[in-house]
Image (cartoon, rainbow, N blue to C red; front, side, top):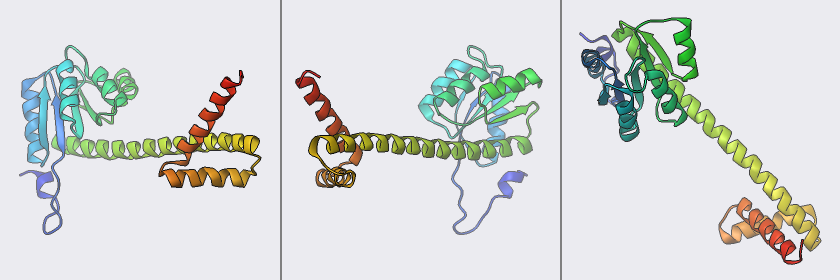
Length: 213
């Protein structure tokens, strides 16, 4: 009897989407055991690999929702694969090690793995680790997106402020008039105020160069 499978919600409106998992383990028997645990728990194992290089190619190609990695993969070890996967924002990583030590924990932290397990891995350990890894990864991705949007917004405001200054200087407009002009141009051309502001600044710089600075 599979605890996780039988504890899932049932009934109308409770159908769960199968999460896609990629497994990388140097041992074929370990991969088989992990695949069995995951499929019985309702996950879809979309790919497997026995070495780090193959794992990285498979992860890039298949774009799984989560990756379960053996820390001791040949060719490219699990820590290095995890680091690349994290840097390229490919998927959350659950790392499985044969032993534990502070050195291993530090390596896992440096590789930005989402969860760290020590063999033997049981279903009770693996499934919560996967779900927490995915949840934390999604939360971190949303936060990074918000940060990116805030940075873009701040940069846009800086560009608009500079363009307002140019219009005030060259056309004798007040600050509010310069702002409304940029705003109107953006509406008329169905584009962003930043795009109009950048055009104003570019035109001003070209004219300055045309006049010899």
